[in-house]
Length: 212
Image (cartoon, rainbow, N blue to C red; front, side):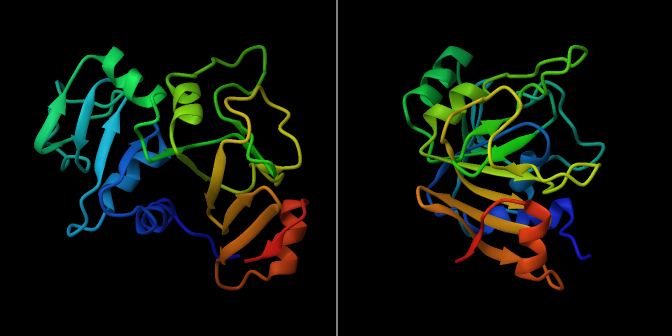
């Protein structure tokens, strides 16, 4: 089965981010989106720790460890970038000033519920960060994730079994097999990787889908 790799997924997300958008990239997989934004499109990237105007990841050996994102990864700053207190950064998040947030997920429900901070396992370490603030504060929430778990279960589910980060907040899911739009009337499939039929995708997900 063909699958998109991580950079291909990030390219697909970057393609859908419009000119002039204020965007937060969650830790992990979503940070790759910064490396694939078109050079001729102005997008202002925000981090929870107080940077507006984040650029792509630095070249290996060129890292400045005084310049990091909220996930403690080295980043770059574009000309004109602004640095500010993290309390102001969270006010920006909670105040509805972000157009898009891109997050990872353990599960997303067909109603757009998001679970991405804790699996509920007693030995797991919760990692909520600013995800709850982003989930409820951003105008749109995009999710990047592998569609299937290591055991083959779909992460797009009827109802999340993990603790929720946000309710009804996800509008689009970018996976390694397909792109899903989540609306009030259900989940539609806008893109599928080559070689994967809609019927097979439906079987893998195990939830109602429709063609866009």
